[in-house]
Image (cartoon, helix red, strand yellow):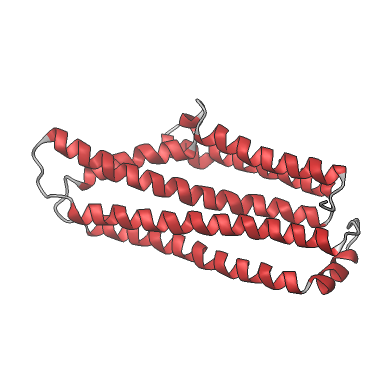
Length: 226
């Protein structure tokens, strides 16, 4: 039997339900076209179309280099976080003693502590796979830019090539975005170390923040030209 109280189960259900529900809402629902991701997808398509009209594509390769640098940073950071969490499993007694001195912290068993660390560990492993796959897809897209024919006259062929290149870029952006989303929800799990009520409140706050940034942010208005 898992050492979880009924309130812990409610908090865990709210966390995973909120994460999965938001993913469906932001990525697959009919409201998806109003997100930052959808606006970026349209810009990727415009970028690839303009790229095919240029003879010199130094700027395009430099942009992809910057994108790959950012993803590489998050991938490396995630590996360090995973290592730290594994170390935390071996220092449970000391960490629990430190945490118990915090005000409002709930007294917990070592097995419950380990469940919380393993939950964080699972989230960051998921984030690493997302960042690594986004890095790989951006490499595919950079190769497509390098292989793009110059002076392509056939309009249908040009549009098809731009569609395929922009699709790769959009897929990479989606995986990177989900890796970042995992970071946000990992912050909510930190509230669980204080108590399940704080966990529920932190999850709710994360949902509000990412919904605002994805659907109602100033950056979205700038991308759409509102």
